[in-house]
Length: 99
Image 1 (cartoon, rainbow, N blue to C red):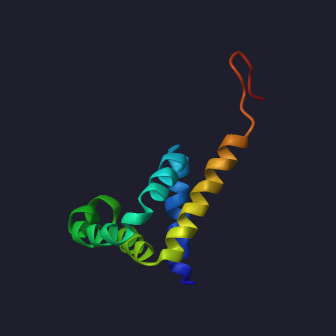
Image 2: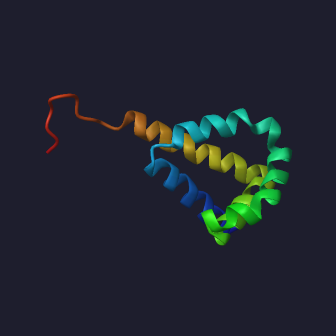
Image 3: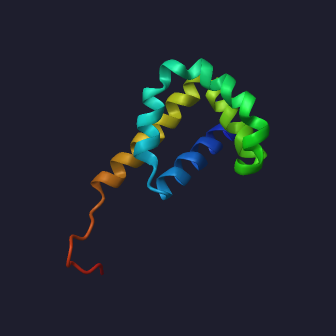
């Protein structure tokens, strides 16, 4: 296991969870698993365009993670964990004040 890759997966899953996108991202990753070889090629092809938007370091790690099926599974697992944690987190209902 590459520590840099695991760190990148943690960063990606954390960023998506902070934006409330962990559940949609997990669903999309699960749905697109059969297309993984095509997505890998798309990531390589789109890298010059996505690099300035995502940052070169993050993009390189994302493409490398897409090339490794075990990393893809770890990312979907992390997103599912964020999704479950968000769903089970206590929330105040309408009219309730948070302490």
